[in-house]
Image 1 (cartoon, rainbow, N blue to C red):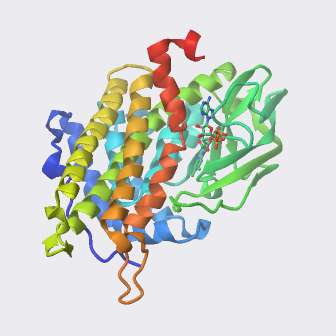
Image 2 (image 1 turned 180 degrees about the vertical axis):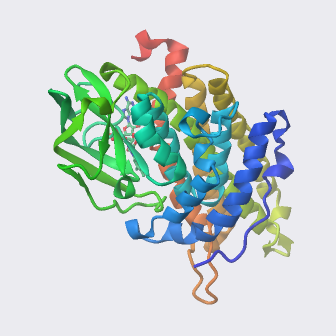
Amino acid sequence: MTDRRTPPRLADQLYHDRLLPAETRAVRAEVRAFAAEHVAPLASDLGQLEEDPARFPFELVKAMGERGLLGIPFGTADGGRGLGQPMAATAVTIEELAYHSSGVAAIYDVHCILAGHALRHGSPRLRDRYLRPLLTGDAIGAFATTEPDASTDLSAAAVRTVASRDGDHWVIDGRKRFISNAPVAAFVVALCRTGDALAEIVVDLDADGVTVGPPDRKLGNRAQLTADIAFNQVRVPLANTVGEPGRGLRIALATLTRGRIGIAASGVGIAQAAFDEAVHHLSRRRAFGKRLGEFQHWQFLMADRATELENARNLYLKAALNLDDGVAFPEPEAAMAKLYATRLAVDLARDAVQALGGYGFLRELAADGSTFTPERLYRDAKVSEIYEGTNEIQRWIVAREIFGRDITG
Ligand SMILES: Cc1cc2nc3c(=O)[nH]c(=O)nc-3n(C[C@H](O)[C@H](O)[C@H](O)COP(=O)(O)OP(=O)(O)OC[C@H]3O[C@@H](n4cnc5c(N)ncnc54)[C@H](O)[C@@H]3O)c2cc1C
């Protein structure tokens, strides 16, 4: 299956990255060219076909490793690029990947930001063993906090995956759910309860007692494979603990703050793709003797959406640049960016389906085999309002800053 045409890219016509560091702009241009060459041709199949580890884009991940794209978030000591503003560069990378495939952007986000960033808190031995192969694309990483009965609430009382100490090993029992990349990953950084506290522990997925389930069947983002991971008496060296054992939740939350900036950037990529599809169609399709774009309804809607896109992009970049500037935990900005951009992605994907009318609802037109992108964008966009902290939780984070924790809890 191939999309019948690629609409013109409108981002640069309306949005000017002039105020961004030159380095960030250069990374955007580099990844845009890479994504057009390597992601765009795969995007339709990856987005339509059922989840299947045999179809996971290993070669694409390897190509990203070879070009150094997986090293964008990291310092040279870990084999990364050592950029001055790594989070901003990472976020624009994710936007550019998501413009073609939000599933590929999600693979990158989990691999680099979640698994990769969590490992940055680890010992030199852990980073050498697990982080370096991530950067080359030789191993795929996963990151697990969610369980069948715990996700939004990650307190020690809610987390049921337990690591018990036995000499110089942990023995882990429990189950994680919805874990991205699990069916193809070499290891997972898993949040486990150790007594009253939580620890992040790296577990090899081929270790005795680990079972990775079959991939879940999803509405969208099908390139992103998710599955359960069950731990049954899994013995893991204590040395696989990331940071101090009691700091697991803090590491997980700091990691998720970065992840949210990534999901915001991915939302902007989806929203921009939907915007371009809609404008392309509205500029050509005729009704009542006019092009649809001649009707003020569509002009005003698209003007509003362009304004929102500008805001969404600026929000994620502000959160990213704050992080790069040393603000350790820019939680409200990251929450606002994620909330705003992912809602916009869903809104704009719906607008694009509507603007294309019946064609917007189609995957493929039987009469001539034409294929259409908006239905995929519509299916893909929704999950970004759910994962890496639901949008209700993002509102809670912002509300905490407004009212204070004594009122919001
Ligand atoms: C495609 C996909 C990929 C994923 N990848 C990963 C991964 O790699 N690693 C991982 O650990 N997890 C992953 N997840 C899990 C994801 O992060 C969770 O699904 C998400 O955090 C929501 O948790 P839940 O599904 O348990 O919903 P719940 O926590 O049960 O929440 C259900 C609803 O209740 C709302 N809610 C909860 N508490 C409150 C409250 N206090 N006030 C108001 N509303 C509230 C939520 O916002 C949500 O709308 C993935 C999920 C999906 C679908």
